[in-house]
Length: 360
Image (tube, rainbow, N blue to C red; front, top):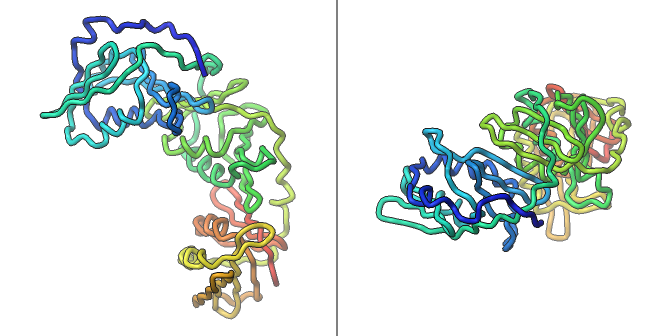
């Protein structure tokens, strides 16, 4: 992506002569809050750089744009103009033993000085990274504290590169979030800051930002902006695709209900090396009867069986299920509902359904 910047090509002489004192960890947090917008592949393009100008740091990889104020603990903005390769800068800050650093911007590099050590990192004074296509936010709406957690769960229930593109995305509506990856489906009732209509955002992009703590949202025509509690702003591209109707998945009648101890997730992990793969993917077999739970897996490499005593006096039930989806289901810690073709759990505002071959 290419753009012409209005930045000066030479940093003012006075700014180049005055180093600024930075708390190393504070500066690292600022830069890492913008790391989701970096192109992680080795590239000569400035999409793998921190663009620093007017006291702000910007990153943009064509899908995610991040911006944050770059200043020291006294609130003084860093007077730097140019594109700095992100990898050497972040690694230098992570590995430095100094808690306070003197950092100075020069015409073609930035200098980082600690006690008895100094690093110079090349900087291009010509910014060509194009962010002009990213519309600016027009007013932010507050999000509830649980929003980031909801978004993380929804993003984990998407596919990566499915031909049905909508399955790679989280659907955001005024009422909440929904997502599916063929093995599992999620609906989460939570305020999203959206007033009308459904928009899609790639799940992998959302996974990269949920740890930032999203406090506010602003929706445009082609991008959604989030603002974090620390002030970093993140824009994600909205995607155009019709989302499937998941209502029938959540409407199946319940046949029986039981509670599984969380340690079952550990058993499932131990079974992973032996899981077989059927037409729908990798599966384990779980049986419940007479106060006993049995987890089984079998493939060409061998077989696995583990029994665990538990309080259960309901009807005998067995299910063949994807182990990763089952682990997600068990994290809620709530009762597991069995339907004719799935397992289901409900938490505070959400419902997670996992596809299963159920035997009763």
